[in-house]
Image 1: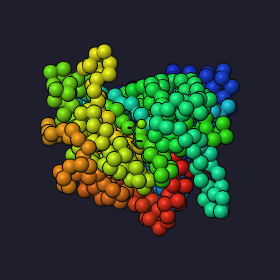
Image 2: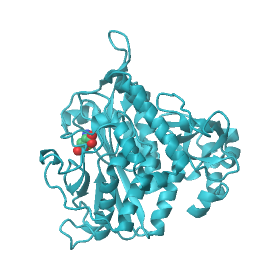
Image 3: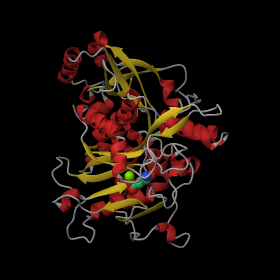
Image 4: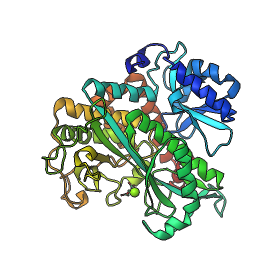
Amino acid sequence: MGDQQAMTGPHPLDTAAARRVVERADTEGVELVRFLYADHGGVIRGKATSRPRLAERLHTGIGHTVAMMAMNMLDELQDVESLGPVGEVRLVPDPATFVHLPYAPGAAAMLADLRQVDGSAWPVCPRTFLREAVAALAAEGHALVAAYEPEFTLGRREPAPAGGLDRLVPADDSLCYSSVGFNQLHDYTMTLIRALESQGLRPEHYHPELGHGQHELSIRHAPALRAADNHVVYRETVRGVAARMSMWASLAPKPLADQAGNGAHLHLSLWDPGLRANAFGDPSDRYGMSATAYHFIGGLVAHLPALTALTCGSVNSFRRLTPRSWSSAYACYGMDNREAAVRICSPTGRDAAASANLELKPSDSSANPYLSLGAVIHAGLDGLRRGLDPGDPVDVDPATLPAGRVRRLPASLDEALDALEADDVLMDALGPLRASAYLAVKRSEARSFAAQDAAYEMFHHFRVF
Ligand code: GLU
Ligand code: MG
């Protein structure tokens, strides 16, 4: 079934894939299957079906209240028109995403779309948003390939000595890239790698990061929808494996105020629809990048302030995006510039043109990956359509340039949301219902955390992400 049908017609279930899922559940002793989705707060939620009901639920989905897309990350329900107590959607799983959960014996999971009761697409579904962005890009002759490079903090969740909110106590105090760090967390790392591999993810590189308890493990690139699905599986697995080992892992952007933040840098390249040729590569250019790549960069840089409202979706995100923390704080691009929001990466493969890619640094794991990646595609696409010129690259730390030379990224979630509301391209792409729900949820988070202190913000973000 084509994407077009998937978006507009009734639920186009791949019956052969559904049959294979039921067979696997039977032979692998699965008793419970989680149907997971990511909400407007960036939280991964779901409902599970028992195995005897699986075959039917693959077709019908599981009923769910529309209101959950008006829920924020503190479980505070927002007033959003048509997302209240009346109304129903279905969590309809994609059989291609079935994974047996290595950290939850007896359980499996699939990523789900939110569909209307008659099976047609629901205009609020985040996975549908990404699918539609992929289709819009395909109409221009391109496919996006993406890879996340996530960081996370591993530790223990402990009661604060004087009572109050729990604290995250990091599991190591090793130095950046240090061999001591490799050894200290070896058992966890090996368990995590095996758990990811058993679910079809392909770990690429691993190292102990700068922050205490901070580690980075990147996953091989994949077409956009699969990359976003993979990132949900990754988030679940990092935390699930830690819980099984009596630890607490957090992918929150800044779980510890005095330690480096956790990014989920996003690597991007455009290909032809058959994924044979990288449209970003051009060996004749000084940085090896094609005109297409520069237009895409132009789109990203132009929309960056608004984009951060979706790629760095939490209040805590903006504690990470500060100058001189290698997370990026300026809307600029540069060749191998780790303080620029968009880095042109020097080629790593034997075939330089095939490995051409961009790295978006203002991206973290508190974002809804479907909204985030979909918005990145729309921003880039706008650059392609308008032939945007990104201007000159920045080849120094932008913090050292005279004030005003490069635009600062938004310094708070509210500032980013203001930019989003002023960005017609992204607002049109989101559509009125999704946009109003997203803004209501995120504005409410900004309000709730503004009324509390930093410890409260840290606690709620390491608890949820
Ligand atoms: N921890 C940094 C961030 O928040 C990234 C460090 C690096 O991998 O360069 O994005
Ligand atoms: Mg890193």
